[in-house]
Length: 250
Image (cartoon, rainbow, N blue to C red; front, side, top):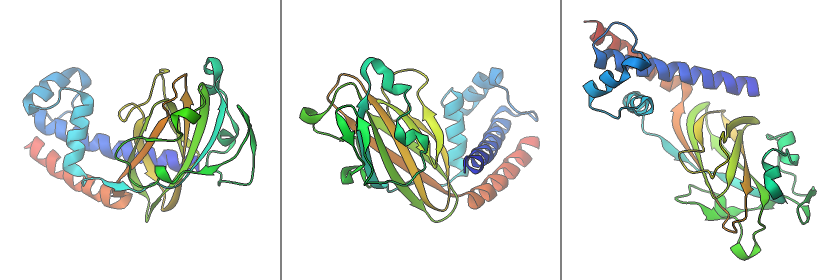
């Protein structure tokens, strides 16, 4: 499963970089692929965001359709586990043994304050506009780790973008593959905990690890936006790149 997921990510990057290079070719009036060290001149010529990410997203918007939000369903929480002295961030608690495993609500695990089990959390379902409380502040356990497991359904293999907003640090797995882990030990936000993912047709399992410090304010929102089936995106990229490259070489 992880092999197929990784291949999907590589295919996506190849398509996207190819599309972005097509934009650079046109903007820079050159027959050679633009390089990072000549990027400022290219950005100035296009009067656009002078960052690689800005140009990448501008190219993507010209090639791919507007993304559609995908509803997150069947959300469950498990915890709290120990996180005193931040030991929980590097400790692999039971859900990490098999991040793609189905939820077993009848199984219990040793937690920070006794045994814990998966519990349904309907407030995390749907298309969240903002983070919601996963526990009331009065009941929150400080210096703890909690896991959220959920699903998203798509009809065919799909390119998507996820983002996680959380009042703690997060790690994210999709279909068993780790797709996001903070390089710096800091609170997540919609820009920091985000990434491209390849969804398979049918149910896709998402697992989020949340590490909280002393704060009692524990909130989470998981958002997934679909750009559509891979095969349609591939055709759009190929047609767009061909047209732009032909114009740039004239």
